[in-house]
Every structure is written in C-alpha cells, then in structure tokens.
Image 1 (cartoon, rainbow, N blue to C red):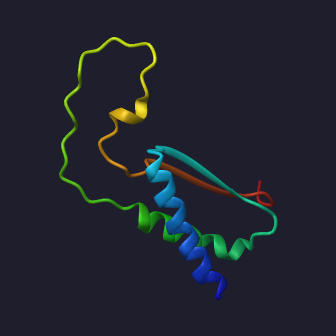
Image 2: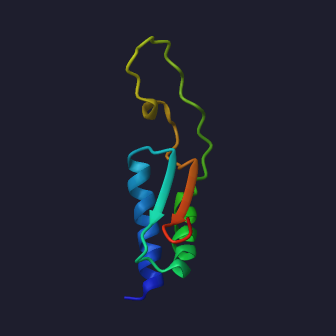
Length: 91
C-alpha cells in the first residue's frame, strides 16, 4: 500500500476515534520511525476529517451543582477544537 494513502487513512481513523471520545484538545506525537515528509499528508487528512458544518445550538444548561461533572457531556459538537502535531526528531 502506498505510504501516503496509509497516512490519509490513519488521519481519518484518528479523528473518528478521538471524536468518539469527545476529545477537545489533541496532541499527536509521531515517533522517529515516521517519515517527516508524510506528516503533512496525515495533518491534512486529520483537518479535513475533523471538519463539521453545523447549525446546532448549544444545549440547554441544567442548573445542577455536582462535584463530579464530566465536561464531555456538555459538548454539543464532536469537532476537535485544538490539534497539535509534533515529531520526536523536530522537538
């Protein structure tokens, strides 16, 4: 399989899995074995897969005072807000 094609699939897969976990801030660290030239392909696929056009409004906020509140349950969109990509050799 072509390496660029594999990186595109990996970017889309990563977005799907992170959105399922309702992650909002994501940092992806590529290991030394990853070709630095292909990180652009991964990043492009990640950003395009993360796009979500929506006219949804924010859900109604319930006034409950709980100590153990999961912030992920308050999210009304699955789009990842912040994405950072780094490579071990570039740091």
